[in-house]
Image (cartoon, rainbow, N blue to C red):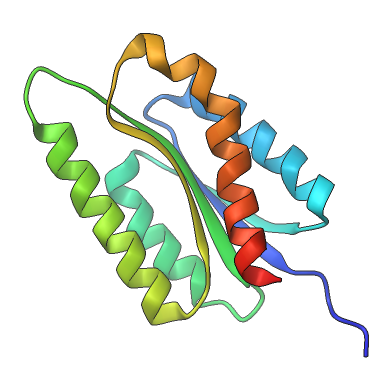
Amino acid sequence: MVSKQKRISIIATSFHKKHVEVMLEEARKTCGEVRLAVANEVWVPGSLETPLALQRELMSEKVDGAVVLGIIERGETKHGLVMGMAVISAIIEIQLQAGKPIGVGILGPEITPDQIKPRLKPYAKDAVLAAWAMLK
């Protein structure tokens, strides 16, 4: 029996687009290394919009899982922390409802500007590897 190649969608946030483009490139590279096909790439305005995009993507029978990439930076208030908790909670719920894995590559919440750059590629790679591990 020959198993078909697993396919994922990548949801990327455009709020920190320059940084997230680095993450997306690393995610694509990692997918190639582990022979995961990228079925679709979806850009959304920010992390708060990822759950709806995820839900839409995971409804497709052509998608076996997903990866989310984004940044929730520390601000002057706790808005980012609250938003981050809501987004992660929604992602977990969607994962459980769909029965399909989601690799989370969202930096933060509460990440500072000087912490962003060194974490871009490792978080993107780890998000792909997490989804891939659950698909094996």
